[in-house]
Image 1 (cartoon, rainbow, N blue to C red):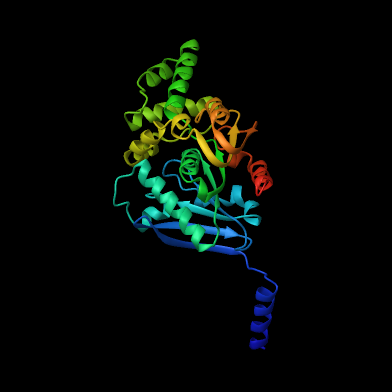
Image 2 (cartoon, rainbow, N blue to C red):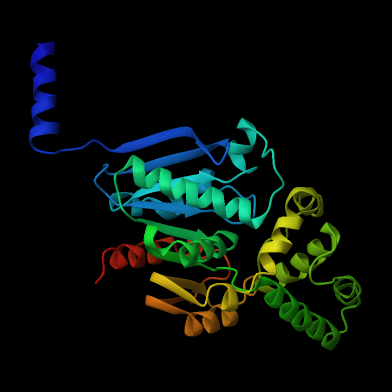
Length: 308
C-alpha cells in the first residue's frame, strides 16, 4: 500500500506537473550574516515577489498574511527580516555599521539568491515606506533583475517631506494657539537630531492623521539603533538619485498620507522615467494602506502581474 501511495504521488506531482503549496521559514546567508525569510505561495512555478518592510527595523513578518493572502495564490511571496530587524536580529548582529549601502547590498544579494534558487531571471519587488524607498532605489540600480516594482507609500525625498510637514503642523498649531504643540514642534530640527525630536514630530503627525501615537519610550529606543540610518536614507533625493527606472514601476499612495508626503510621491511619479509606470490612490488610507485597504492593494498588484 505504501509503495502504491508513493507511486501515485510521483505520477501526479511529477507526470502532471502538480506542485504542493510552499510555506518555508529559514535563515539564509546574505552579505556575511544569517538573514530570516518566510516564503509562501501556491507552488514554486509562481513568480517571486520579495517584500521590503518599512522602518527601518519594522519587521512585517507577524502580520504579512493580512495583505498578502491573495497574493500568495499568484506569487511566491517572500517576507524578509532585514539586517538587525525581527528574527534576523535574534540570529546575529550586523557586524558592520548600518548604512544605506549595506542595506542595498543585502537587498541585491537577497534578490540574486531568490533568482538562483527558483531559476527566475527576474523577480518582483514590493516595499512599504522605508521599504518603498529601498525598492525604488534598488530597481533603479539593478533593473535587469527586477520584473516590476510596487512602491507603497514610499519615501522619495523624506527630508523634504518631514520639513514641509513640520511647517504645516507648526502653522496649524499657531492658528489654534496650541501652546503644547508649538513648544514641542519648535524643538524639532530636520534632519532629526535626537529620538525626542522624532517623537514630537511623529506625535503631532499621528494626531493630524488620526493614527495611534507611538509611545515615547518606544521611539527613543528605536532611535538608538535606527535614527542614523533613517536620516541617511531620508537625505537621498530620488528625483536626482533615481531619475530613471528601467523596469515597470507602480506607486500606491494613501490620499491622507502626510508621513511620506503623497504630493511629493505624486510629483516623483510624474518626473521619473520608467519602462512603464502608474499611480493608484487609496482614498480611505493614510500611510498604512496595505493594512487599511489590503483587498484593493492585492487586486491591483495581481492585475498588474505580467501586464504587457
